[in-house]
Image 1 (cartoon, rainbow, N blue to C red):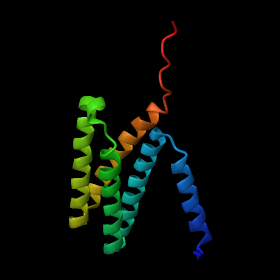
Image 2 (cartoon, rainbow, N blue to C red):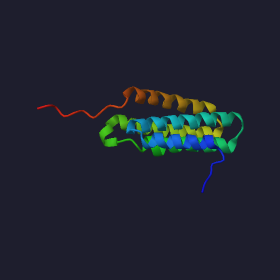
Image 3 (cartoon, rainbow, N blue to C red):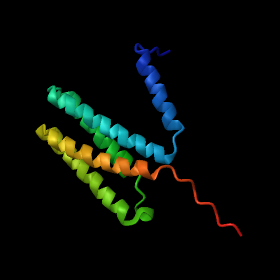
Image 4 (spheres, rainbow, N blue to C red):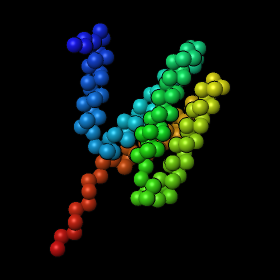
Length: 137
């Protein structure tokens, strides 16, 4: 049987798993934004501390969230031109994160953080919208 040596980390893991399991699709996207931003903030700190391996892991995590979470969740048919533009923006963010990792460039991390913050804010504004009820006859 597995026993966690860090009960606080175990509690946090259970809390995250519970929030993901009970989250609406809208909330899941918000969690992806938050995860990507947290990974980039960690990478900034690791970059300034010279923690090369940790920085690379954090940037890789952010890229993974952007590509396999945010970008993969786009519905290009239903989303039309907005979804296509977001897809291109997510690809740009991934490129900038790769650049930041290779060149140790915190400004590129800040740029991606700013872009994510804007989209995250807009996504929060939308909120969970219930399905439209059929018109009464």
